[in-house]
Length: 374
Ligand SMILES: *Cc1c(COP(=O)(O)O)cnc(C)c1O
Image (cartoon, rainbow, N blue to C red; front, side, top):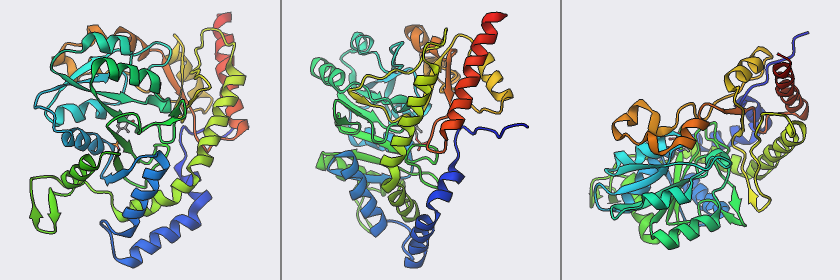
């Protein structure tokens, strides 16, 4: 008998587990006739800022906008240089260019896959004004490393928390490290809406106010605009859905953590396989469980033949993308460029049973045994 496919992500299953609450939240919004702004958005902003531990949360249209609006609100000198890790999703760097600034790619550390601060320090010049810290895969960048770097280089700290809702380092929640933070609630993220959604978080009152104005046509009143902004708002339906899901997030994080624990116990000691070890002082949100192997493509095919979905995040480092060839920065990021060929994201999420995790791990081990024989 063929066993069922193990999906990388299963949002329909998650919905089935909370459908009563979700349906009632959606019905409530539709019945209220309030679709933009209103009590659901205000309540979500309050609840999510409390969850993260900052004073202000402004809901916006998506995570990419959140980054772009956050950068714009900082009012940096035009054409400032902003440091950004070479291993991330393109949204992190798009936000820099689209807000009128220059991208400078920083290499990553081979073990954490996160920003290499020694390299970052060597790149700082008089036109460097900020750094975007990306808590990639849900792994928090070390808070003490960020503070040390900030003290030395005096840059503005922007956090890209799109993959790391609820993660923390030394008890410090991501989104509270620096000046301003961006979150995404894209459906597949750890806290996902049923469409596009995002938020900007900060404890700086003036910044929060400017973010809200930029995201809503620069308005202070219905038809009173003090500058040109744009339209990027969190809608009421998404806010109501996110409020329901936020209540379950801690439980889902524990589930992800348990999945990671099973992978560790079943996969450690496998030759030629590097697992994403995280020190106990850091709470990893396990958006993704990324392993490293030099035979990545063969392993991915092997798993697929056994009905196991996997992913690659990301198959190209940012500086090597066609979109950034003009910058000619790929020589400076050899670690990130190399990792792109060796990383594989195994199925991860609250949808997985212990049995399924075991099936994945067994298949990974089988692959390595077979390979050694050949
Ligand atoms: C998803 C993601 C974004 C962008 O979020 P969207 O809501 O899809 O626009 C930004 N940065 C990282 C690291 C992401 O994973």
